[in-house]
Length: 137
Ligand code: NI
Picture 1: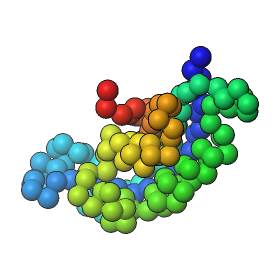
Picture 2: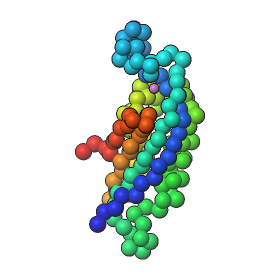
Picture 3: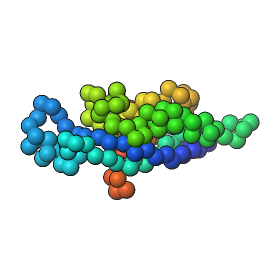
Picture 4: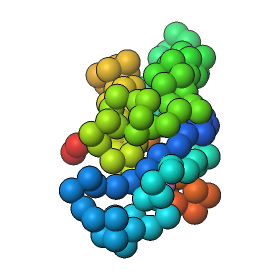
């Protein structure tokens, strides 16, 4: 019996999507408003799902306090109120799209999750646009 435990979190961050090897016109046509050279912010909503067996002693799949603290130290402390392109090393050379941010978050959290548990990241960049990543299958 495997159960999914979910924790929601939130961070505000600025970004710019662009490729330096493309013209301003091409960046604008592909990335639209997200290529604004002066950056802009998003209110990111994060859902972290951990799926695994219930521990018969505690009744927990994972202690939600541990998951909460893990998200705080690995994600919120690194990303919240930051300019992702300029201040977060993972994005110095990686476009901070929602897709790439979800993969980076997954990679930061997965080493803290037990081998017999699975992890899924759902990241909302806007209320209507969101991505999911649960590792390579
Ligand atoms: Ni954007």
